[in-house]
Length: 222
Image (cartoon, rainbow, N blue to C red; front, top):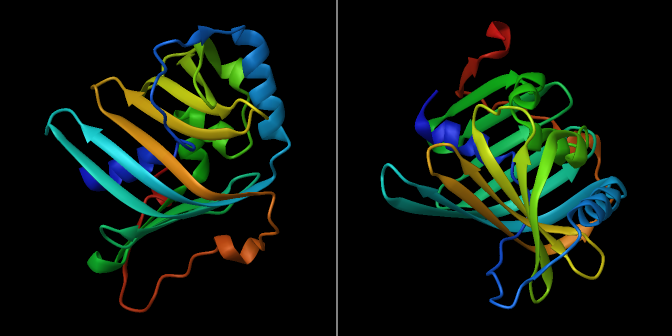
């Protein structure tokens, strides 16, 4: 799989918006905060928003910026539609994950369980995991409008060094994330126009490759 595809797939484990640390940040009770965040997310069955994704690749010394829209319906359904800089689609139902690159006329399919088995944050995003079960809370800092929560995997993760979540101080709604891997790369997400629990038809998460598109099927190998 190319670096471009790996970057896109690793981004899917991340959720929502990043913020700048307040120099007067206050330490909070980590356990109470993470329980409140989990409770709020458990009450979220679907989500619709626009996003800006910022990825920093340490080896290349470069940053990449992308934007688009996202739909999430628990459990397991996600649709990330990139509009810039290149059109791309990352879509999953409860069984398969598709990565469609229109400019390359190529679509890649894999079993969704293979993504979840290697990415604990993806389980949480899809509504199939618990933060307190999979992560240790490193620190909770109070910012102007958000709580910054640093999480470390309880078990060794192949790709994840640590995860940072940003939660609304008013209601503990998850607003953003930063995912850091073991190579020093990290991806940040910023969301706007967030709509919580909209009605989303399951058909929105089905993918049918257009005529002439090459299909690379990894699901048979997993």
